[in-house]
Length: 336
Figure 1 (cartoon, one colour):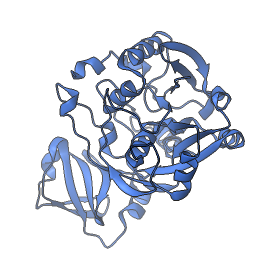
Figure 2 (cartoon, helix red, strand yellow; figure 1 turned 30 degrees about the vertical axis):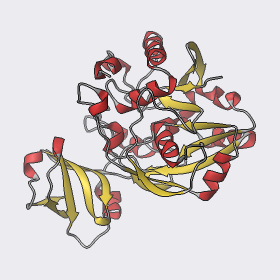
Figure 3 (tube, rainbow, N blue to C red; figure 1 turned 120 degrees about the horizontal axis):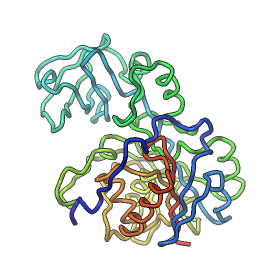
Figure 4 (cartoon, helix red, strand yellow; figure 1 turned 30 degrees about the horizontal axis):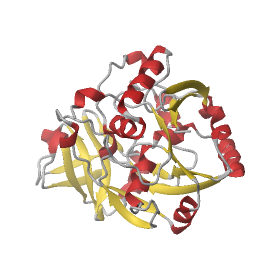
C-alpha cells in the first residue's frame, strides 16, 4: 500500500504550539463508522458503560533532550544495561563510533554500530545514573514541530504539561499524548463509572519516526518495552469493551493478546506495526490525537477505523479548525 495514501496537507497554523489552560477543555471528534460528531472532551465519561475498561499508559516522560549550543542528544531507550543508550545525535558527524562526546558535564563513548538519521549508541562513562543526571540538566523532549525559540516560560510550562497527570514509570522519550487531556477529576469520574487499568509502554522514536518508504509495508519499527501487570490483565479480560487511551496502549495490548483476545500479563517489548488489514484481537474503542501525515500512528488509526473513514474525519477536523498533534484536540473512535 502506497505511503502517499496516508499523506495530507497540514497547515502550520493548525499545529497546536501550547496546551489549552485546562486539560479537559479540548475538542473531541466522535467517529462511529462514517458518522462524525463534534463534541467536547469533557463529554468523554458520558460515553462509557459500566462494563467498559479504560486502559491508560502510565509511562513517564524523562527529560531526554541534552543540548549545548549546536550539539544535541535525544536519548531514546537504554539497551540491556543502564549505561548504554540509543540516542539521536546532532550533528551526526560529531558522534562517530570510537569517539567520546561531552555535554553538560557528562561524558559518553560512541559505540558501534552507527545508525541511520543520526541514531547512535552512547555509553555513559561517568559513574552516575543517566536518568538522575538528566533530571538536573536535561530538557523535555518536545517534538520538532513545537517551537519554543528559547522562551523560558514556555519551557517551564512544558515540564508539567508535556506529561500526563498519572505518569508514574520513567522511560518515555515522547509523551503518550492522548493521556494529556485527563485531569485528576475526570479520572475519578471514570473510576466511578467503569473499570480502569494501567499499563506501561515506554515511547521511543519507534512511535514518532516518519515513514520514509514508498510503501508502508517496507517500514520497520524498533522495539519498545512494555509491562502489563496481572491486575491490569484481569481487569481488561473481565470487561465487555476495552477502550485504549492512545496508540501506545493499542500496541501494548494487542502485543499482549493471545489469539482468543485474552491479555497475558508480563514484561516484553513490541515492534508491532499495525497496518490496514490487521485483525484487532482485544481493543474495541480508541481515544487518540490527530497525527502527522505519513506516520505509523496515522496508519494505525486507519487500520482501526478504516482508511477512508479516517480521511473523512481528518478533512472534517481541518475544516472545523481542530488543533492537531501533541498539544492538540482528540478523536474518540467507537464502533457503537
